[in-house]
Amino acid sequence: MHPLDRFKIEFGALGEGEHEFEFEVNDKFFEQFENSPVEHGNLDVLVTVSKDAGMMLVDFTIEGVVTLPCDRCADDLELELSGFNELVVKFGANEEEESEDVIVLPPKEHVLNVAQYIYEYITVMIPLRNVHPDDELGNSTCDPETLKELERLRIHEKTEEEIKSDPRWDILKNINLN
Image (tube, rainbow, N blue to C red; front, side, top):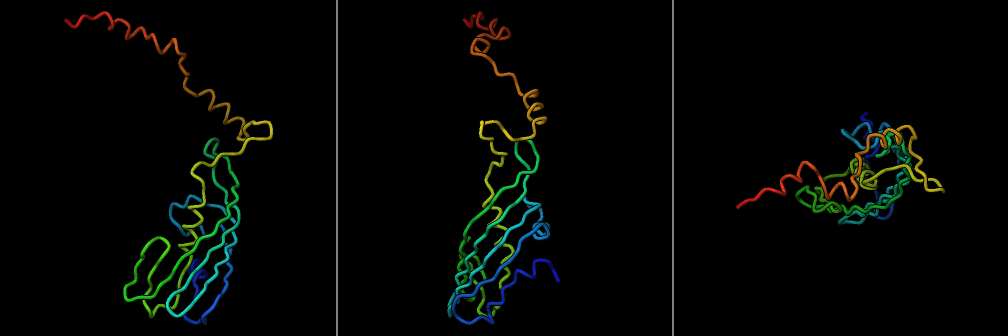
């Protein structure tokens, strides 16, 4: 059995109304996706399927923690995620994706694997910049050795006087173009 098969919802056997499914997302889940920004995580996903004759509304409630490298010091950073997403599933002749939140499945389809949707919703919840927070005194909680090395390698910022006068270019000011 493929590790993502447990994320299949057999909606064909469901009656009309609301149905809930609970899934646990862990490291093995993220291993199934190539180039995943997340390697470690522990999240709970509640999928609520509201089914009627012509369509389904699939709600995803996701809560948990992922571990990512800090963008500043590269040490592990635990990031709490919490979010809600909605997917509309319609039934029609052509299987297609109308938009990122609406898909069309053929009428004979009876199974929906929600793994890809869960993965996408989790990755979209991750902020663009992930840095250890500052402590109560405003000091960075990043690895102190890495911060020292970053400061040592930082490019020297020029003063206003250094910017105004650069001896390499000052001689060019004396050139007469006429």
